[in-house]
Amino acid sequence: MKLVTAIIKPFKLDDVREALSEIGITGVTVTEVKGFGRQKGHTELYRGAEYVVDFLPKVKMEIAVADDSVEQAIGAIVNSANTGKIGDGKIFVTDLQQVIRIRTGETGEDAI
Image (cartoon, rainbow, N blue to C red):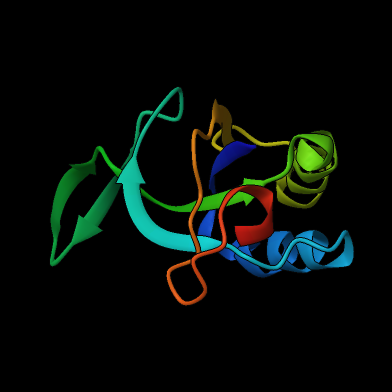
């Protein structure tokens, strides 16, 4: 099992969720986060004062998937989150040691 973590632009969240649903992945945890990479923030004007916004709003999606679904999930995220502009995000894939469904006690891929 793998944990796929995707950091994407907030307005792409619905597109990514729909793309994942189409391939049968329904369990997703979403967190609103802030960060920056190569995009390096931007300058804004507020009440006549200019200031730099270093951390940009992003959405962090965490998806637990079976090993045989990882490439499909990555493809769905890349295709639906891509705008072709800087700041589209990143995907991290890490090994998942154990998953347990609290309600039933199921473990492993059965719990996903």
